[in-house]
Length: 481
Image (cartoon, rainbow, N blue to C red; front, side, top):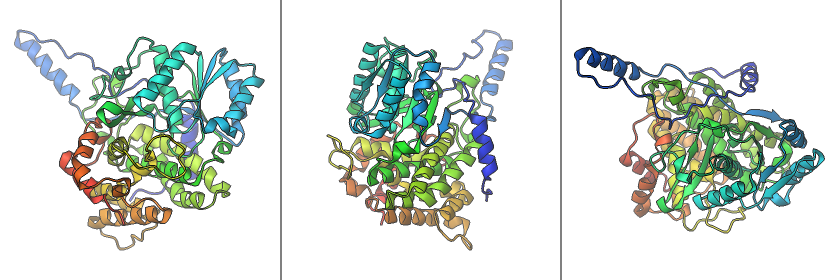
């Protein structure tokens, strides 16, 4: 069983990634052409050699993340950051709830002190759709900013990333960069605008990643754009900005951290993901579990196990809330390079096909199953399905969540972790399976159809996963308790 990473190891890694890798690697890039066809056998031999080289098993992984600044009150520095960038025309993205609260006030006051001209876009949709993305894109193109600030949760940060991308690619269509097969998966080969992310929840880790997720309504599927070029140049992790989170937002965002950590830690190892790329530009952002992501994800998991129940139970437990803001970033670094798999893959279908469920304390004008809730709801069934591939890791996760594994058998790892997850979710008051959202066995087939296109994450499952396996996970997730 892997040993617990030391605090020194985590600290060293924080310093290492602080310089922020600028590698443009992306899973959707087109590879260099193979040696062309030729008439004689000598050239055929070269073709076979080239093909063999391209099929070499993966042997390397990369580490990339945004620069992060951590500290209570650090938001007051954002105006100076933009002045240092010589920004003259800044666009601030937020939603109508955050627009009334301290985080946007702190950002606005900082920009004003620095003499920065800015405009605030308040129409971010919680759990964005293609239509809400397009509305934000149109606004960014009209305003033509030279820098962008995102103040909010994952929905706001993802919306700002999309607006940034299409403010630069002014003639592109939304689906041009969306992950295949739902979109064209084109690479980002231009420099985007500086983007500073100011998270107001402790969950998505979007301040550290190059992903922007949304609902593609006509396909009834959740999808997104994934490219390291989308990463914010700076994430300001200021615990003061999370103080206004309602209890259920603390719960849902914290569950997202939990699943980021578990999935990254149990993803297919990077050496088994597939052939090594013919060019390093082809190496995907989501590479599979690897020694560096493992450290971040394992540390985040331990922090969630200790701090999330406290944060949900007590709005005044500042220590727990501050720990969760760091856990979100740690998990973001972990899964931003290691990836997620079946919990997230299934969640995209669950939230995308939700037509009636509204989660408490979310002030929206549309049905909403919060992302973290929809991800965690299948976690017990996923754990049962994946445990055979790495029983020691699954037992370690179970132990972190409070299970006694002293005499545990490796063959029982799935059951042990599933039970630990069920207890953890039950104690937090998470709804009882996807049936709580209105789904029945009759909905399994359309859910599977919505989930199958999520190639970017399904391919990181440590077990081969098709329609039959996904259906089984969903059936077992109708009820959890």
